Amino acid sequence: MVKVKICGITSKEDALLSCEAGADAIGIVLAPEAKSRSRYVPFEEAIEILEVVPPFVSTVAVIVNEPMENWVKYLSYFDYVQMSGEESPDEIPLGQSVIKSFHVDENFSLEKMLEYKVRGYLLDAKVSGAHGGTGQTCNWEKAKQAVETGRPIILAGGLNVENVVDAIGTVRPYAVDVSTGVEMYPGKKDKDLVKEFIHRAKNALS
Image (cartoon, rainbow, N blue to C red):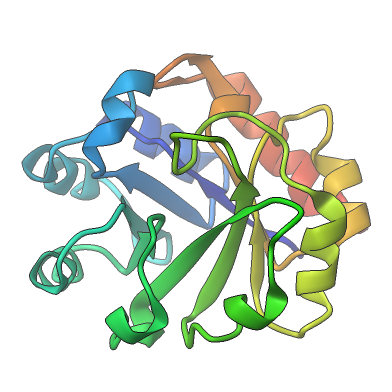
């Protein structure tokens, strides 16, 4: 069964509704650039949101080009850090607690992806000036090729209740990641969309 991460969580209410709907993971964006999409959460507020997350739901800190001392701090509270910037393989010594994001275009290289020895690989659309959360669709063919490497691939980028079944059927990822596609408005999740997305994703291959 495909795992589901609900990303861009900004409140305790949205964290709870995602967990109750069956999310396997929630993501909180600590990168200040997400302010433009109303999804940025300061670290102190993120810790308060984590208080309501029950056991066995993974928590992910989404970061962009931060120094190692910040990763260590975040991992005292979160289960994983998702590195969404231009971090190099040599900068990631904590691989078992790291998910690395890649922004896929026609120049995307599987060989370069595999240089990163991390827990999971998240593939998102490449959009100039942004590190994710744009709502643009990832290249599913490139993502399918990544899945064929045998590594755990998390498909993100432009997923919603209308296309998630097709996306999973085409790519066969380990997990899917959604933010924009289940929002009422930027930064606020829609309870019904979250429930329907998770239901469709988890039943896509049955």
